[in-house]
Image (tube, rainbow, N blue to C red):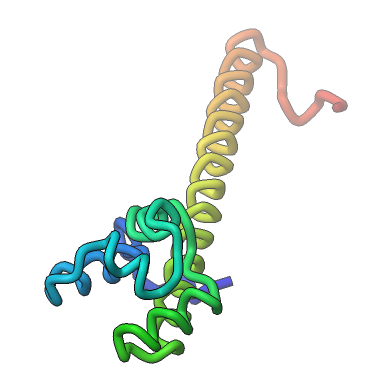
Length: 126
């Protein structure tokens, strides 16, 4: 679990997005780059569009072709995976908190209904 006070980006950046920008900056077409690294253009496109993750194998190929170290690609992928996971956990907690709040509200409504009818909530065995 991450630190409670850690700030997570609104939209995590997939390493494929960075790869796409790098190729564009260097004037390299995706199809050409796919050929250089021995990958199907559709698979490379999936990485660039964030539909596939950067693996150790692809990180090595990117390093060899672009000179950007393997560890940079793996760190980018690990950070992306981490942020997505943390955001999912936070979203789950948010949904859980909404349910807790709803139940508390129902409990308050029940207490007030019982009170109106002169029934003490504390005397009810559950």
